[in-house]
Length: 468
Image 1 (cartoon, one colour):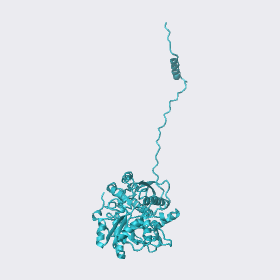
Image 2 (cartoon, rainbow, N blue to C red; image 1 turned 180 degrees about the vertical axis):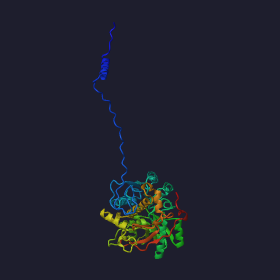
Image 3 (cartoon, rainbow, N blue to C red; image 1 turned 90 degrees about the vertical axis):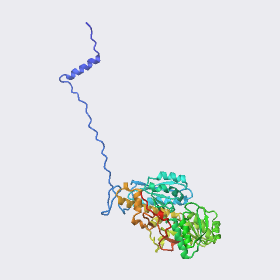
Image 4 (tube, one colour; image 1 turned 45 degrees about the vertical axis):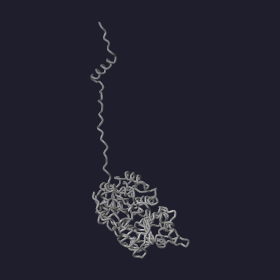
């Protein structure tokens, strides 16, 4: 008889199974199936608590902002970008660096006092193009299509970029009020009158005051410096009996201003028009006074600042060398706050700026036109963006195109922005044409005319609406 060998493990398993079937065997607990996992619930977006809004006004559901809301904007408030494309370290750095500082300060001031712009915090995204064409192209490539609004400067660079600005909807406030920048009409808006229009205003004044008919152009050889010299200004000279006797290039920092003024005087010049700014005007005005050339200078709107006067300086007996200088003004100066009959007296915007200067110890020679310009640009964008939001109802609809349409609206013609400047924007106009003549007297800019409308020397074919 054969022996059957059964592996021990088999015996154990069978025995266990038999015992499990016998009465009184221990009960085996079946495995527990875990309950289904409920995914986390995403809470609905929290609408900012709104208290204090006047009845019936639009309240932005995203930010809790309403028109006229004041106060400090929370640190964690939503943000949006604003572009800044200009020369910050090249030949025009002396102008645009203070402008960038002023722009940043103005946006921060809005966040500290006026709930930002419609409840959001503007963040400056800047690019230094160094007055270099390649850098300007690179900077534009980084900024284009990303921000609903921009600040810009540089005539030559913007003339190069103009064919892109308009189809790309690159909305910008610019101090380059030049041909092929703000005109033909498009997405670039000038913060001062078109340069040729300013020239016409000066010619009208000198003829009325009998200051002479022989003019010298003493200006930069750049596109900006010569932007007022157009076919239209030549025709205006001929029409009004003005003879251009000298056309002299001046560097940004003239090492020998006497030779420049002597050349103009030798040519028979009585009056001078220039697009030069404060860093250049200081040495020219000092030489004009000390050398006894007695040329009647006129500057454009960019040089009506304390810096121009401070850099020309005073004589030993306290006489300001800049006295007698005239300029075309379309926006406020610090002196307006002390002139009761000024149209900008008690200017809300300038009062805020002067208080900022005083509390931040900004020196007179740094209180330049570009700093003033920066604040009026910021206040302008605040009004334009907030009005666009109210019109459309939500931030996601606020685009460059819609802001442009707002600024072309009927109520943007003759609009006074914070008593800092008067805009004259429309579907066919891109520069302010409401100006006054100002003169330096006893070291301060004083208005010597009321506000008036300049002659428009823009070619008719450039005054056509932009359609997109």
